[in-house]
Image (cartoon, rainbow over all chains, first blue to last red; front, top):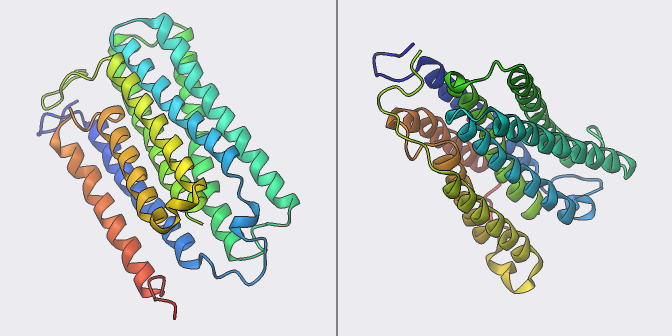
Length: 187
Length: 102
């Protein structure tokens, strides 16, 4: 169904949703930045953040975005074989990212950084945890599409469904681009 | 149901997607490199913010197809994004994040 502007209503609604998500993440990033450097007890960011490890996670998420657009291109040309492959790889890279986040959170807790420990812990876990929850939703969505593709129920006519999932996935990626810079690199 | 309504144009080719990915990887390597090179530390924050903004723009323009799609989608995304930026700056100003240290 198209709107009076001639645009698909689902895509338009999804862009509006992404706009609202911008404000959600901006509020979390603002909170992190406001409380930055105001923790009265450690661990502090420079003592605990692992840049090489997070750089690999960032690379992983960037590559998953590439897989996603390749999946969309495959669906648009009706190539179900490659669509299945790219969709699965996108979800797999998403799962690798989540595994990395679980490892990172666990190691931080072992080093004494918890949600209640200090302002850095509270704002860091809420911000990156919210992002991780979004990645989890994205992975479930991708696996659903992959399952549909496996059953032969994802054809050229469903390109918009894949595109909307892609919009969500790329948004999660751009949010990470900002978090990687603001939280990890600018300490 | 129409999948390509008016106002939307053909998406980039796989070659374009691969080139964008290569640029994104290079920019990430530069970001991490800049972080470790002490000579860049006086200009670390503006450099990293610029590189991050560049990566953000590339993903939004090419992978999210805002470069080819209807301008209305750009408005739907750009409006809240601008509001989010202003809100972040406003909150940081209100809570003293921009106070110069003596």
